[in-house]
Image (cartoon, rainbow, N blue to C red):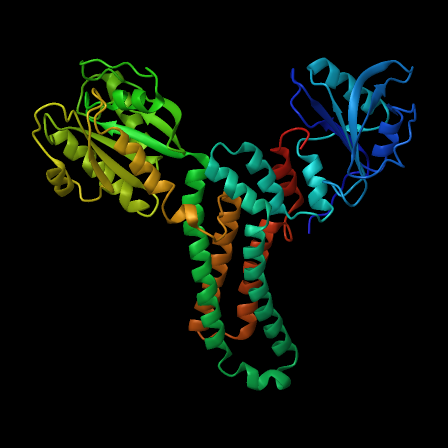
Length: 476
């Protein structure tokens, strides 16, 4: 367990943005929080005492400086340890907003003996006080940073313990086997009969645990895509309508659209929301053979964008049919999709349906079997374009993932810890297959147990804790 090396001091920071607003909040936490704030606060009766203030209530009063000059009228709340966010005595001063006003009140608190809190230090103290584990602490920042409904719901579920409970179940099962092996090694006579056939039983247990971890990792990978926004590349040969699609999804003239092939020579990026699903769009240069040096650079960047994407929107001009350039693009996509078939999705848009067609949906499906969906539309008239949003919604939001009740490991650190535990349990099965003794099993079981403990903070290094909380916003 991480052990705090800091002083048992009192910290303070603005818990709201330092900007012009109706309300601003200064949060103070630590052993001297009540005393420091009482020296500044005067209630309606002219009293400075906050120790008799009823906990978890809010009261009207004033903030005054050391000379008795009134600074602002405020509402003040007191939370006594351990019943507070940090598990320490905590005072929250709700003043009027404004950069100067909040700064003035914060200065008075700091002059009274508090120090400025580091980013995330309030939540860090909640972790150190045992109110929340590390995965729940990280969920706080995920909730603040959420940019879509899926990210919000997932962060809230993690804050309520979805990840913690799953990890505890896995660790509990592993710990039981570790304890049994340890007991059997220490007292072989007593456990002699129990050890008969134990390797086979342990192999079955490891198989079930590994299956659970596989499920957590697969769902986590998909969930991470939705949480962060789906990295989406718009690709196709020149003049297929890529920039028109970007403008349509963005709802603005973000990219230049002309009849001249090769207009887009670099990648354009835009974040858009399509029927509740966040897309991180990249409009790419048309992929074709060219001698133009600048255009070649743009084409290489287009290929890189494909490699980094989870979703590809591939436009084909149906008025011209499938060309050699389309065949080259299809070969790139086939290789791209093969690497992560459960995560990577490809939607083919048959654009320019308002013109006489040279090819159709059946021909394109035969041409590129790996496409997840083929849609016909005209980006010039808008006909059929709405089908794209509906398809993306079904693919990412309304499918099995949105109704998934199991914990989602959308945090990369959590997934890495589960992968390490997975590798350790796989080694246990390998040792069983090789006929090794029980003490070899215990080593890898311990490694799996420790790896999972890094998720909740029960087995974590000091520097990792510092790094995690340093990414939090000030005042949280």
